[in-house]
Length: 279
Image (cartoon, rainbow, N blue to C red; front, side, top):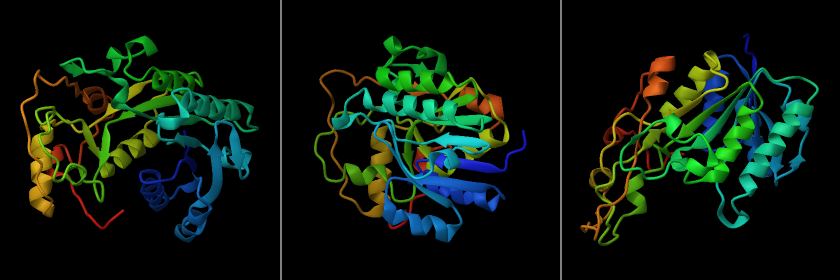
């Protein structure tokens, strides 16, 4: 498949630096944002900007032109919150409906999902452990995955906790007392590796498949928090033994590594690169 144009629906903390990498590789990149204030920055970097939102129905700039692309990357954060569990599946359904109605078929789609779909099974988990909503800790997100896969040309990427640069886990718990989840293993992915994985799938599409995108090492939260606090001078939190062992899951990236041969820049979350003032 010859890929020239790539559209990123949700060109934010992950999508914007991804767009920059794809531009540097010679692609034409279209990026959407819900913020009018960000549009000049897109133009300046060479990203063709679109002000688009799915609320859950599409609103904004020329959606048909945005969807005139070789690859569509759907990077709308799968959050529920005050909008309710049904909102994100409705968003993805609206995106899929727009794709199906578009005048030009899109050869390949990548949908960014979340490892929050996995329940705490107190063991290593793989993609096949959750394939239906009734198996999931977040049934609505599985529904959104299934909707994207129904296009027939989509890959689902289940991202772990996305960190690096100015997203430093230790800063979120600095000074807290008696944390009882210190022994829980982390399932993190550095942003640079997240971008690398997406680029790998653009180059080597795997339609109809689902992959976990997490670093292969899983140190404990306590180990990560302590190192971050030591490195950046945050107040180290204190830890306490929970009344019962904390539930956990260890998410395996083995399928990702085997299928596309991806080599992680940051395999160990204890060695993630951070830049507190950097975006």
